[in-house]
Image 1 (cartoon, rainbow, N blue to C red):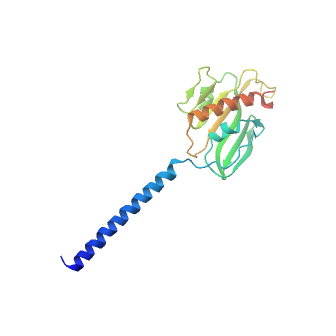
Image 2: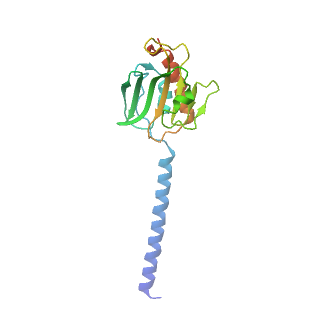
Image 3: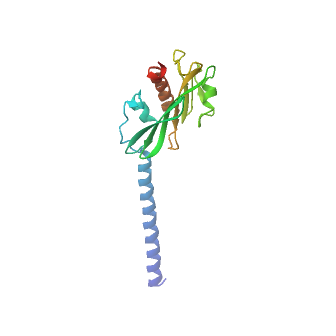
Length: 186
């Protein structure tokens, strides 16, 4: 083998070793950064659109980000929706909606995205998945404006990558109970 051929072979082997080291380092760094969920640097208020909630339960159903904003919508005479946005992108909706007396959580859930094949509670008041859920308030929740309807609490995540059945169930049950104790039921 000539000196020139030996030099070219040495450069080739050196380049392969350098490339292998770079790939290994990139894989290691990517693995480390992917192990931790994105930081949730924002603060969740205790009152969301007039309903007092445990901020930790709400935060568990939200994605990582730096800022949180809330906005109230009233799309019709019987629905109040509290939309939470993280870094300007809608992330979670907590809604109160009146449905016909005699409806149930499983039937009402059909009207909301991401509730297909949800888990139904033993008392039939709650149905949830990892992304959404519907809870029926107790029978004492009656108001004159909706005499023949029942009030339902609805939790819906948006396309944020959050899919956590345990977090959604805890938030749904707490939100439903908070709605029962609010002015919406008096």
